[in-house]
Length: 126
Image (tube, rainbow, N blue to C red; front, side):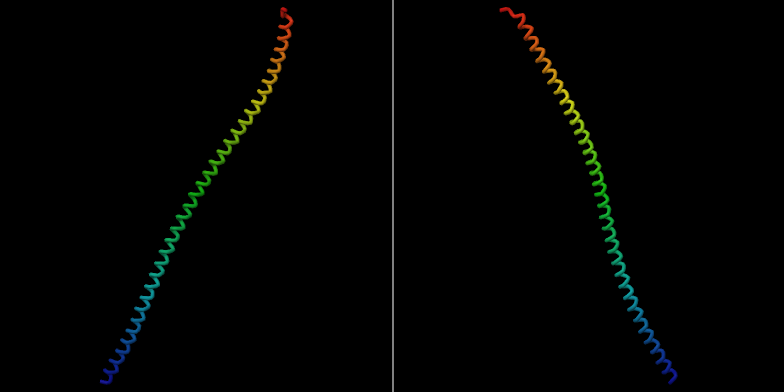
């Protein structure tokens, strides 16, 4: 009987150790589960942040394209303005030259008119 009692006590001790070990394992599994869930949540937050960052980068790229297009358009407009200003300058120069010619021709006409008046006056009857 002593042997049976001793064996029973050894079994109870082993079961107690096993229960304690099992409890420790359960606690460790719960802790691992919590840690894993936290890691999953943090990974999801990082993914969300990366997606948001990707959206911002896309918006920046789109704005860069718009700015580039606007700058190109502005450059085209400036070039067209420069061409037009050059044409206007050429037209003004041309008008100035024509104005000089008109003055010269007007002076010639005045001279011819004076000559005609003198000639006509020589033929006047009193």
